[in-house]
Amino acid sequence: MIRLFLSLTFCLHVFCSNAQQLILPGDHPDPSAVKIGNQYWVAGTTSNWFPAFPLYRSNDLVNWKPAGHVFTKMPGWADYYLWAPEITYDKGKVYLYYAGHKKGGNLCIAAAVADKPEGPYTDLGPLMCEAAGSIDAFPMRDEKGKLYMIWKEDGNSVGKPTPIWAMEMKEDRTALIGEKKELFRADAAWENGLVEGVSIIKRNDYFYAFYAAASCCGKKCNYGTGIARAKSLLGPWEKYPGNPVLGETAEWKCPGHGTPVEKDGKFYFIYHAYSTNSSAYGGRQGLLNEFEFTNDGWVRFTNNSNYGKLKKTGKIVDQFATKELSGGWHWSVFQNVQYKIANKTLQLQALPSISGAYLGQSVLADSYQAEVTVQKNSTSQAGLALIGDDKNILYAAVDSGAVRLIQVKKGEHTVIAQVQVQQPSNVSIRATVKNNTQVTFMYSVDGKQFSVLNGNAADISYLPPWDRAVRVGLVSKGPVEKTAHFKNFTLDNL
Image (cartoon, rainbow, N blue to C red; front, side, top):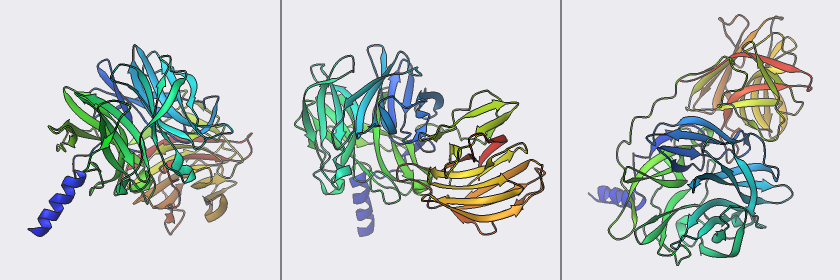
């Protein structure tokens, strides 16, 4: 009885749930949601991946269809770290607020505008650039209809507090005006000195702020979600005594940074969390949870068992049949990746950097298998890769009559395995990943009989950056006049 009481007490404290339903598999941090017309739209963080800020649309909040991206090139004022998009709709215009790293400066919050949610988007430039950095923009009108910008000062990056600020914003979204006012900051033990990712909804007498606290990312994350309320947008704000309202469960950990949205008179929170199975390797995935407003003026997650049937992601097969890459491919914002598709062949121009030029797909399971055929007319080191970032990658490549397994770790290059192959011939390369940490590569010169390249599974636990997940994809390394030629890429969950 005592054990049962303690278990129930803990679950009431963090609203334990098996109903944090997966809706956006793969690496989709900081999901922002809005209803436009009869559909719902979501945007998510891409960090140092292009294209930036993927867009999805849905009729039911559960099944989402890709609908393009906001940026395919870096906004002229920024150089990297495209984070925390917030997609909104106001007076016939779609606005996307986001954070980026300013050239020669720090993180700034900025805005872009479009006539329709799928774009095209026109960048309006930075709105706020504090010395410590500014991030997590959220627009909100006060009780009198005046438009404000809510954001976090990124003090944690320099060992300082992280106040949540509000400041009036011009209706054309080109500037903030007046004086900024602090709404609240971290003052509870569970927040570990950091609050961020605020999104606000107005209901009856209160503004309700959903906010995230503690450490967002990586293997040692301890993120959670809290609620605060105020009768005026500018405060005073009070925090729910039972925070955090979302914490770790058996299936998901570090939940937070999302947006409340209403559907058919019910209210839902779309946010991210790590799977306890795939953790940092699979990234922060998009979840859905229903909430309601309580009689005492707070928020309670209802934790229903199911919000709808999620269609499973099937095997990804890319035969490069169109002139443009499919929306599932990503590349580094630091690389000038050049490609061409013709005759069902992807031609990827090489780069001489330590990692080469690479294209990656999000992984959607703990264990998976990828395969591609390297054409015999490739002139670069061409192969299949597990990708962390520009200085951390593991790939098997065909080059000069050999297949080599090459590890790049913290910018250091090591050949792990090597076999000679008869050329000229097409070479198929296959990677089998188990538990998101171990990979075995195989190769075939006839597309039928495969041989093992590395007898001992290679460790890829070093790959994921602190804020992103592992990708699997293609690599082309060498002088820029060299190219890799690929056919028939597949990615399948095991």
